Length: 214
Image (cartoon, rainbow, N blue to C red; front, side, top):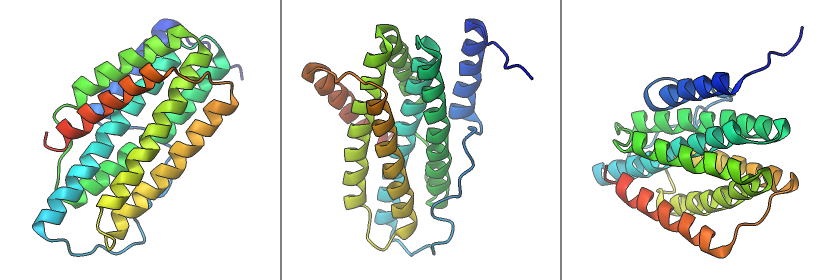
């Protein structure tokens, strides 16, 4: 059996399908087990429940952005190996989408109203990174995942210790993000200049502060 050759139009349509699944449907991941499955739910007071649900809403939106970034980068990647690497990481990020939404539902929360806006912006940034060249695109992955790792560490500090279900999800996500950064770095990522790293951090702060409430 020969592998099908996907044209740019095919890949664009695949990205449209992914966007619709990410924002409105059921994303396709690797179907790894839900990290919180074997852990007991604990009683949280109303303030704690709302707070943790808001944190998980931020994480969910972060994964929406990550999905869009990877899809944009895969669409414009110059080498097939880079494209395949981006698509594989995107599938793992889809696991995170499912896990975050599951936890939000358990906490009687909701996803962010701003997800379509952040998806569109992240896809455009990812596509631009891909056009800049594969090494720059991989460097963008390394920096993105490094900042996400810091973000997850901060959330682990803000989630109640007894909420083991939420913490298990965040811990596994953190492991995956570190792995994605290591893979991109080993593939020849070019470090991003300091001004660009600072701009990425500022954009992340805008996202987290707005999505906590919306």
